[in-house]
Image 1: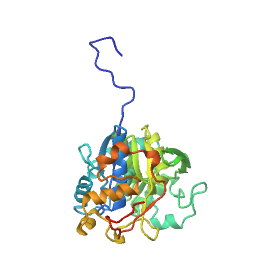
Image 2: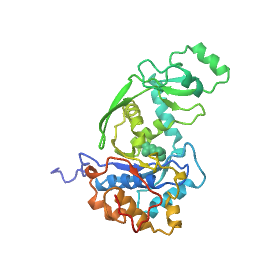
Image 3: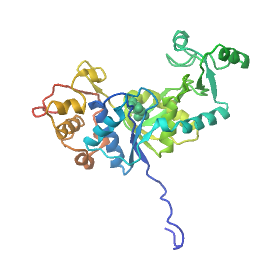
Length: 317
Ligand code: GLU
């Protein structure tokens, strides 16, 4: 502790950052999304972190969906620290990151169509489906020809590794593929993998809790963060919710949104109680769950949802 009474209070050696939930406003959230949001909130608040809400609206936006998603998240008892950030308002930040990578010689224009990429052989050292690097070493003249032919160019990362390792609170060490991922799409929109990295860093997010469908993309994102000189957050990829057929839950699986459940006469408390039971707890609000939350006790298996459950008679997991 400083003995100099006139000195400003020192910053704590470790500043606790923020967690977040980052929905894409493509429609209403289903119970699997709400469960992931609840987990993100529990991880953040149980570690004294801030909790931020980010609307990932660069793509696939359905009018009114973001507002309904936020209303449902608030209705189940989650609260977050303002402001709600919208990616569509942050394009200059993504472009600044792209410019830094470009200045460092780490980007190139790609004129391939989706079809050409699918038909090309997989990159020699890359994973199945990795971009084969067709446009990586085009000459200036070849690039000019393609531009003149009116082909819209995407911008790709000139990755210098094929793999990168991250640590995940639930999955441990995870090594995954890195390829020449798209940074800016052919239509000019910054790519999700870039935007998420820039946003998490600039919002002080040091804890990323999200569905484990995104685990395979995480080594790419962590690698990109290190190239940009940004710190890599802690990760916890949580199991997805499945339908009765063992597939990822979707809207077509029946009464799976909060609105659907309320229409069936259930209460918000009952729905939250059902989500809590799926996590191994008996509780009816996030606040009631918080003091009991232990990440180490979380189920590691996907949760299979039965949309025809009867809340009152459900034996719970
Ligand atoms: N917007 C993404 C989604 O809804 C989540 C991205 C993330 O959490 O990093 O699937």
